[in-house]
Image (cartoon, rainbow, N blue to C red; front, side):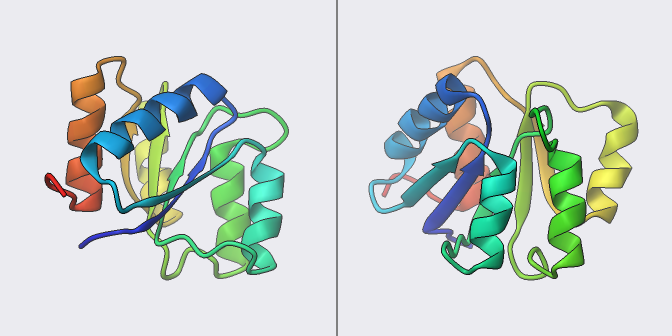
Length: 130
């Protein structure tokens, strides 16, 4: 499946820049939005201001962490049709089942290697050299 409208919810600007650079290498046609505040992201989703095909979500964020955001998104039925892929610097082992129960489609540790990030995006998004 190909996702064209990609939302990344992550408070780390450098990680978002790295993600975008890899995404641009993988596909020139994808539309990318980064929101660095999870509360703002939830508000925009609830108000239908943004319409992502897939969400990449960080776990470790201040104010509201990724797990809390998933819980809130579930309450509002927002992730019913939107795949959510966790992309975080650390994912505790006991979170894996919780994340799946909350509707996360998959989860990855943020790579530091550009090639690995591209591979993750190709696998998650279905983009191959286009």
